[in-house]
Image (cartoon, rainbow, N blue to C red; front, side, top):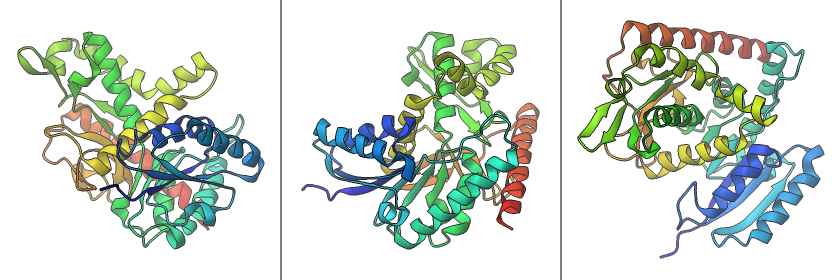
Length: 332
């Protein structure tokens, strides 16, 4: 029996990530090859003409799964009835801007969009925040959409997770699909901690630990970490534009695993509401290793955290605590 369409909101849909993301959703990359979708696209009034151009292209592409397109500059219209919300729109940091200025702009944006989701989205709406500062934007959204369950508000660290998988696969000359269980801890920022201590690679002789195969702790504890942390900046330097394609692809991965489930024996990284696991302060949106089943994520428990890792986890938690304080000061 044919499934009913799901309504998927993409904010900032006329921007680079949005332009890469909407055809992936329409093709079934995010929710599966048998799940029809109605796309809701939101952007700011100055982008209305460009947004209409994106809508025209979606029509012209004749995607069989795409059952309708709503393109709007009105948050209420765009948020009405949505089952999944991918929050790509935000205010980017510009040269000469202080951190508080950027935070203040994004607090204002996420406060108003949260209110629209709170009043008009489907009650079980799943929210993924992509726009930076992603963790703290998600926290603000949670504050102003209290009826959306806290487990339904997440932020994107899957891009960093995928970057870590890619680095290991290139280092070992193996298929990226054979590498699993890396972890991104903490903030989607340069303090994030890409952790391979529990990661494995599928080999002819069975699964082997990444550390055992790489045989270079110095690289894993330094260059590997900074490469993943600074990959976004490296892409901007090379492309003169930000990483839109990989961000869109990882947003699809995040939602697909959340909705459809993670494979047995593997986990992924998601920015989720901390319950105090691994001594991370409760009340932060923090990236943890999670498994997903029946549309719910669960933090993987019981992993050993060595002293090196502990310092990294605490450092990124400290930055998130500072960001939270800064964001809340913008509310007053």
